[in-house]
Amino acid sequence: MTEDKKIAIVEETICKDKISELPEDLLVRILSLVPIKDAVATMFLSKRWLSIWTMIPTLEYKDNDVQDYADFNDDNVYDAAVWYKEMKNTVWNLLDKSMQLHKAPVIDSLCVKLGQLCPTDVDVVKWVANAVSRCLLDLEFVLSWSADPTTLPSSLYFCESLVKLTLSHKILVDVLSPACLPSLRELSLDCVVYKDEDSVVRLLSGCPVLKNLFVIRKKTADNVKKFTINVPSLLELFYSTSYDEDDDEEHALVINTPRLEEFSIHDSFGDSSSIENMPFLKCAYINLASCTNEKFLRLVCNSTIKFSGLLKLRICPRESDWFEPLKSLLENSPNLKELWVDFDCGDANDIAVSWNQPIRTPRCLSSQLETFKWKEYGGTEGEEQFLRYVLANSKCLNTAIINLQYNLKRNREEKHMMMEKLKHLPRASTTSQLLFEYISRI
Picture (cartoon, rainbow, N blue to C red):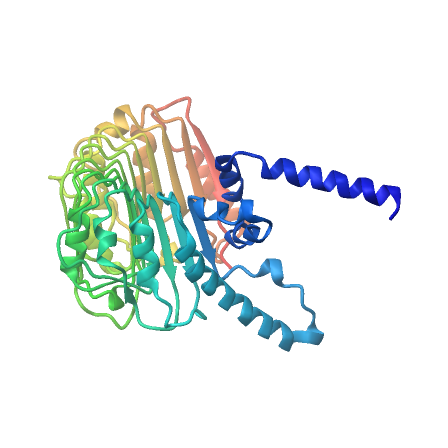
């Protein structure tokens, strides 16, 4: 053996010894930063490393991330497919076996994402129950297998340590009795299925300190016609529904969140809704994708609902008759500083938009509004009248941005004439800027 090789071996041994001599808590922290499969593999290094990985507090298992292994060429596609299948099974086996060997008394985070190739006989309940029994703080469970939605252990809904919970896709939320999640602050329900409407109520009623709620629904498949959100502690709500042309049933959305500060709704169904006062609301984004959704817009803009704390509003109506309810909303939002309007209805010339000037100027226009943006401005008479009204009454306005709708019927000269006309509209704020943008439709 040459002298150089001897030196290299000695240096490598010293390096290994130094790493192994580090305190166990530091080694655990280091292993927490690497993929779980690599952390588990360290058990074969020596007896010193045999059980260190079992104490890492963060666990992440994904079976849909294969870019690191996609190094096969066209000549061995079959081998790649076989290897990929084995790799997938390894992920599930790793999850099953490592959860059995894992010993950490507290699991800070467990992330499990299983795709369509996931075997339908894996014991999902056992994995989650194991984690819940050890003071689980954060659970993200995404299940997209080919089988029917599956229930999770009932202990999940009584986990006192849980702070953040994300459930996605083939999960059946079945809550038989009122939940008890005293520490839960963030909850995401992404295209899950519910046993019934009571399961929604029981789950949310057991979250006394919940601050953030994220809900995405496929209504024809989730067994809920009336979705009730009654959470007094809630600060931020995101609610989205997907449209299904075959669904002609009436759906209802009930919101009672008196401390809500941020509200975002993307609704393509036009729910019959019930909304209580939101005096602390600061930011609202209302995106309504179907004609019947104007019912919701009128509800939000009801004269009895006050939004005294609302500072930012972005509204995306999808029907012509939206000016009247918007006037009520402005009346009830005296401190509004930013207003965005995104009116996407194709060719504006085909839409009859009418504007009737209110008897009195909303307080937000006369003393608060600083930024106004109109996306998809089409230049109809009603739109111009509304824009004229906003500019003429917004005394504190700093910036107005008009995003012009692309229209094949207009040539460049006509667009230039439109901009020049808008530039000369009277403005209450002499220091305000009027800017223009363009949208291109493909």
